[in-house]
Image 1: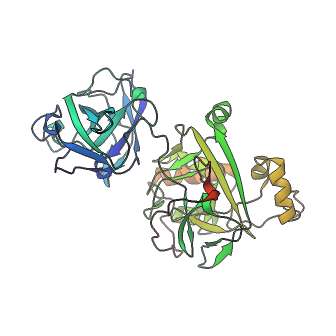
Image 2: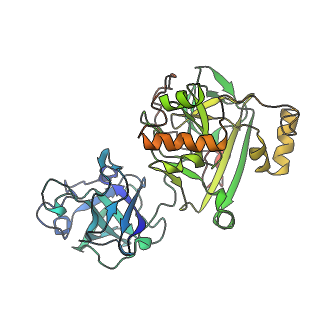
Image 3: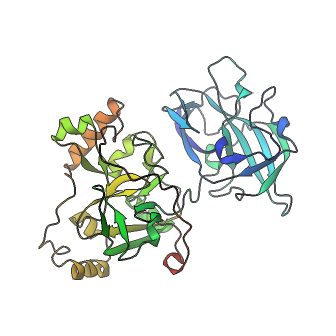
Length: 392
């Protein structure tokens, strides 16, 4: 019976080969061309690959393993229905510590007629979540072999943390959201800036998310919204809203831009509920008013004190919010939304129309985006002590 499955892959662009090796098999599919060679991981930025399979294993030479949708890996898009397989198996060893990791060459079967093993697009690792080699370490390939035929897809490693804190655009450059504090200024969609008045945080562990799956975050893969946005994977709470701007939005709502909740977007490619994070810290930025800010370059909202958001906060934070903005937490003062927020059913219909017409959500974006500010600086100091993740 055909079933849905997934594995996580580290694309070849995230790897270095100090002695000039490459993943491609060229003349053989057993990985022997890599024996004794050195491979270095530059990041842990893995990508989820969704596929169908007739069994529970992810194997070599299995013709039933096919992509469930158009999938982009390292800038190359492979069509829905393309075959994928675990081409060969490698043992990577740290010569200093002696520690080893099992990896497989992830292969997308090219339609060019070349041997299937001729191209290998990345590595997948076998083991529990997070069981990847460290970055920046030269690892030696100490064993190779034909691809596995009996390893369940669930035995492949998934990421523990894919990215540092979400990068928020500020006048001084990108800053991890967990490093922002009251008084710091952030860039707005109109080119102006505004001070952060309050940072609302809530940390959830695996047990809490297992008890209530609605607390799990939404992951938006880099480039999933159009215009190359987000610049990196963006992780947000389910109710957090992002800007949608397209001809479809204009026809449906009579305005060029609306805000749509993240969990409504999960019907679209490369946007999904992330079930792999063992913990998440949500950080909501409160400004003087509801505004559009930039997270990983993507226009999104600051905190909006609506009924759903207020119910998710501890009483102490609601009380603090009320002290800063009298009436906002009690409903006596209604906050004005930065953009129209359509009813839930119309949000879902809007997403469905974008999907049906293969139109990116930001295809009609006209606002001036902040310049490419790169990744945020590494967090240091007391603001991030004890934080496992920090997202908006």
